[in-house]
Image (cartoon, rainbow, N blue to C red; front, side, top):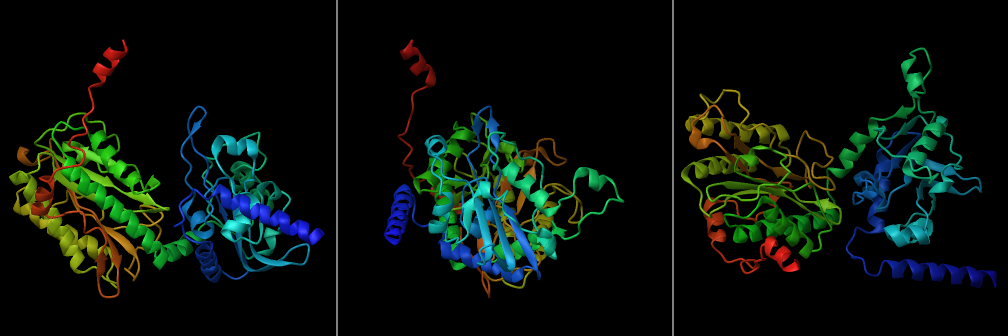
Length: 491
């Protein structure tokens, strides 16, 4: 009878968890994939060690409103768990529980709560984490305080050091703040007082630096499953660029352009943005991470720089296109644009496994410096300037500037190549160049003998851009009445 009762309860739990997730997308990474990632990490851990990962904090936006929650990418990479207030321990070697059972990983997660879920959404709970994410040892996060682990027996306890920016919820004894404090006590984490007193002995098995290199080595090389997600994110982002090229008209606002991009992302079920959208018209494009997007009336003589990336199932694209608002580049705009394009294509020529990030950057700098000198914007190729102030390449993946090794390109890395030229107002050159800002950014999969240009469907060349901008847009007839008329009607 007891066996039948246990079977019935487990069956009910499976049906409950399945029902609560039946209306969610089904193309997330599998629990088996995350399990393999944990095993790969375990292989790289030093002897007699444990790695400890904490979920991201809930961030407050204002008053009683929080930002939409986003999981720590390392935590998600290793677990698939997307909720806050959790801690994951991965051991190099098997540990023995009090009941004699052995384990090499354990996770503590926020519990199911009918009241909390009514307000803030579904939770997996410990049983759901076992069933959906494949953790044999998953427990309510309130159990972490009672979890008896002797951190002093490990040669190394690896974790990312704390930034002291986590809020304490006094009503929750197992929120992230509490989990961190409990870990500090268990691991004998030095207090500020101990750090201030040099004579006070500080335990030296706490390693806050080693995990970064290990995770960079893992996350920098993408698996087949990750590449599928990245390809979708890139394709969606390219479609956003294409639709904006067709919809662009003088008089539109930066925020309107941003909205078209992000509408396309949502139309394709991308659940988030990989980073705040950058839409800078005219001299606003000279601000590298311009995210105000406030300009209400873009003029026909301006370029508009659009750096946006959809996030699909946690993985982000990173694509930039710069186009003329009126659909045709002026002579000066075209000269700067084609110089940036030439720099990008020069880097593409040497993009393959074995090349270095530094070689790609130098290739773009050489082309841009010579071109700026030929145009008379700088005096000679060796003149130091800020018209191209950034590097040309970075990894993308779970982060837009993803973890990865930045020495040599390796097969199955995914990187950007993004040269740019930014000439602000009052620059030390002829006025005809002022306010021109151009960045062209594309995403590439590194292969053994070269690369796959993932973002090729978004036009890059001058004639391609101008040709697409002549095509009609599905939004041409989407005209809203002025807000003043709506207010008048209400009155």
